[in-house]
Image 1 (spheres, rainbow, N blue to C red):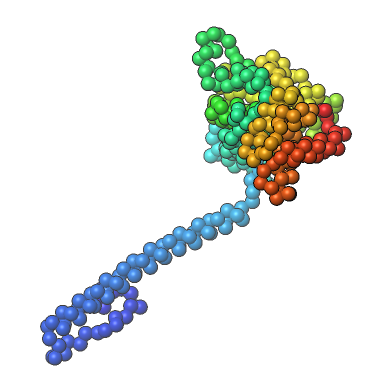
Image 2 (cartoon, helix red, strand yellow; image 1 turned 180 degrees about the horizontal axis):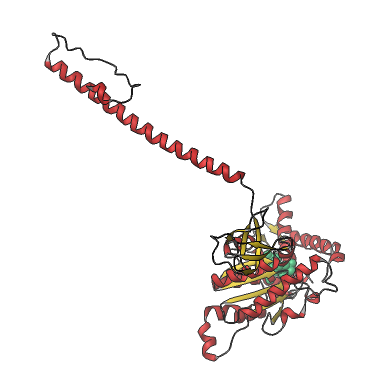
Length: 404
Ligand SMILES: Nc1ncnc2c1ncn2[C@@H]1O[C@H](COP(=O)(O)OP(=O)(O)OP(=O)(O)O)[C@@H](O)[C@H]1O
Ligand SMILES: [Mg+2]
């Protein structure tokens, strides 16, 4: 009976029942019970094996699918220039344009979209949704900065101005509505290297809780050749989506430098990127909650177009700190240092023409002097030596500097 129920032949029962005359009823019941137990155990093993086999089959199918995907030729990504019924003009990344067919199931294709294109026929296979934030998000740094106002020494006037232009409109837009003025879209921080421009931009982003989108001008044109203009467009689209947002363009001179000749393709590319930036700055008037901060230490070569009214029309100079500023910066950077008899007021006198970055370097260097002598505290003498060292390094690199 038990044998009939089991359809699988590979299960063998460990015992067979031989109901001989000497087997009493009790022993028989026990034997039957044992067999039933065994039967149950086998069934559950069977179920488990069937499940396992199902899973393996699925794994196999997936691997097969993956394999066939890998074997497929890659599709090209092209820009759709113009759609004409079931055909379109596309532009490949190399700049060449083609007139091609659009596959039947591709709907809602418009000029300006990105499309996936078959390598051989160049026909449009599908719409590519990569113009979306996902792609830009890989290119830009989008993190809430840790820096805040407390990390900045000096620069009182600059901080006040930035608060008025960026922070206040983002935090209290109704104030501007009531008074009836539109706050500037953005500002340009300029001045010698290491004076705290990047620091200021990060601190204001921190204080407003706005999405902080950081891009570096030189990277925009060097790393993403041919993509710069599109990237600028996407960055601003992202900013609008994540508003309130601050777009911080460091080294904006890499994009917006006046150029003597625009002959080479590289310069044409930079120019396109720059034009797109201007277009974006002009275009987002209605969105008061996106602010743009540019930073440069080459105001001398900056294209005036970028600072025209309605664009980055507030210029804030971030200069070298005066003696009072140097003292405050030194306080910031020695905050966690174990100092012994350090005469800060005297030391900052001797740091003439030091930038904030150099003051920080001097503090770190002083700490190294202590460590080298196996001391756990930093003395005035350590600072004197450190300042001298930083000054020497500064003079060594003076030749290569634009400012100074
Ligand atoms: N005013 C300041 N207060 C405190 N630290 C400062 C100040 N200025 C500069 N520093 C220090 O120097 C570092 C570099 O400054 P930052 O990157 O802001 O300079 P920058 O003006 O953007 O320079 P660059 O033009 O080279 O980009 C900062 O991270 C900070 O440690
Ligand atoms: Mg900087």
